[in-house]
Image (cartoon, rainbow, N blue to C red; front, side, top):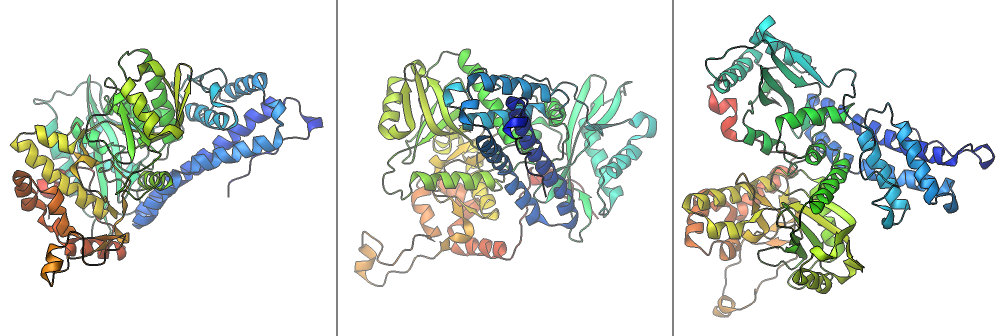
Length: 590
């Protein structure tokens, strides 16, 4: 049970009401972070007991912790502080008091974001970019010490590589025994030796560093670290899984930059990691992932609200240092969203239309619920993560006339024009990808076949996670910079278990055969997999590849079998790395 926020003192006892407000805000954040860490600590227990559904539930529920604490703090302040005592001068003093309270804080950057969230619910948006909130960080996160330290160091030259690895595995603190730790260590050492340059000369600074807390997600626990040899660093991730007997084993070693970038993707569920000093974990990970921005690393660690804050700072910085215009996003226009982009910035901005035309049968609230579902679900690396924002101000001069007219026409209720500023009241931001239909038009034979194979695999992996994409048209999928196919159009998404997969009834008469409309009853959740071929496989080259790898997607029996496994509580394995990297596929395992 978490303690409630401290009440405001009676008016006769108030020394400085602005200090009381600052203290209440920090109490609210501290309560949030205690609950956040409790969920991360519980992940270890769930992993040890093999309670996979509890791991997923913890990750899902943790997403909403932050907003609940913000609402609590706002209500507490509004009840205890009269509106006339929350004026401009008072709010500046509140911020100064808050900065003072953060002097020895372990998570000052996240606490500043919490202050912003509370402030923006109380103040009008005209204050969002001035001295009333933290537009820039006020407290440094450099050299904040954790107890125990955020990472451990090991020295193979002193003890030998194999004993060092054994000590590392002992120190991660898992109580469940390993099935064959000797075999697993041999596999890890073989992979390391393949990667290290030959002949290997050990430098004076030769060590292995691993983050003190394991990273938990779904059915895996992950050791994250790097091998240091002089000026060279070799990042690695080692997955720890359960075998069929419930014992632990090391499944792989991820060593290449591409493997690590895909593994650390926000297109998956966020990790559960117990961090006293999150900035120390971010700094360590940035050394492993130099091409990932800081905001994305905070996000994948589950601190998505601070990630949003950093993303917006990066966005404002980019606007100040660029001059190109926002334009309508290229590709087929959707029925639900108005989408625009800034060519020099690798993201798209999506606004829900006021009127959604047939054949779509959704409204704005239903679309928002679909995006909420995706945010809280395991995305298995196949659904683009989104950043949701309200009241975003853009410079009007950077909007092309075509884009401005489109927004005025398609979403007038979400657009406010204030002088030189365009304010969008609600929007989603996603990383920009090449739409799969455009990619296929440009692709050579090898690229086409690889992307179609991956497209079918994406659909199957989503199904394994109890997700049916709904609209499977190629235009609703994108291709990432690593060639992975990812789904990004969520207005028809649903849980797989909500869908009724049927076979097409056979026509009994000529009239039925020739009917323009279905002569049989079709329910709102009925899906006929045979029909997928009609609108997906019109190109014979695409059809040939699809049928070679994924013909079972056209068979209702495949989908029904998936539903039965999910209903039976079976969580299927969708590894965040290639099957080819697993030790069981690389080496003979006894």
